[in-house]
Length: 410
Ligand code: NIG
Ligand code: FE
Image (cartoon, rainbow, N blue to C red; front, side, top):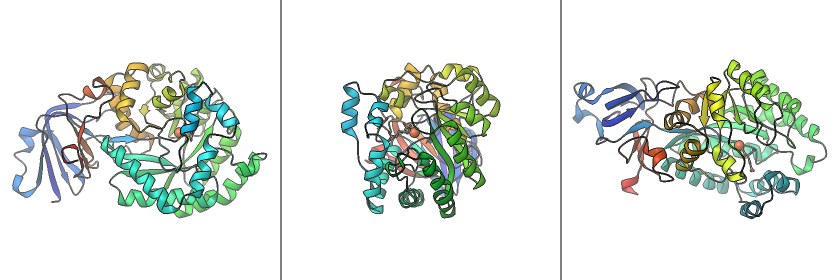
């Protein structure tokens, strides 16, 4: 039916404020044609609907939240690098592995070699897993092609999946993720190739919202990054940035200068960078599972919040620095180790994550006019998202008003 009535939410965690969960006790939601049309108390909304004329979902006193938004992932890849993980366990650093020919360029080889169908099937299975953690929208990046053909293959895979899979996908072009081996000695030539030959075709294909660059020591310089982002803006792509992950290179400052939607990682961000991001309204996307997996200190989240920055959280799922799509682990690390409150973590995965992909008018909170993307938890309170460490407590996932994951029916 076109009308869905979700009732008896012990806590309806609306996330309607970027710094406040705005919880409605014993809340209810009406979703019509996939879009939220009413939000309120169960006892009020129950008088407005004819339960025989709509699908009724009884939350039975459990918490109901907006679907999570994983706003920074590299889920579209083929091949694994578990051998590199073993080397890291033995003490080799991510950069050392990169210098020895490991890292991103290895995933590039396997992603180039994979057929469209293989890449789609691998990516689709990863989306299933994310959905089971309550994720209803993900951002996915290219960047494992580094040539026109494969970058385009990644875009097409994500476009098809966004249509066919319940999870919506915001697509980011990350052609400047690494310098591919064929341009190893001439990175500027690679940048020209991206700017002149790759980016116009990618934009022509359609469906790509953002341009991202891995701006860091040993990867792309601030100047090179500026060139690529500017070209992206010229072509209509909003900017976002892998910034100051390995070293403090001025990535955050550049994000502010470029009016980027977000700057991500930020493990080594400068105080000036934080200040400039706050002034320019750039969302800070923090990826604590990556810091954990690389055994690096966490991003200075409290300092950022103190400076008035909007802080979002994401998994950074990728085959190298962070092979994890685990939302429970993200809650554990961001609260216990990065210093966020449970409420800040929830907002970081909902409304602030939606802002990081410029979709906070459509998703990220339970408000009239937004998509009917909500989750029901099997727990007495939303606090269990952090408190019940490492355990997936998502019971049902509802996407545009339809139940698309139900733990009870697995
Ligand atoms: O976000 N930092 C750059 N890119 C990824 C790593 C990708 C990889 O190692 O394959 C990241 O951590
Ligand atoms: Fe990343």
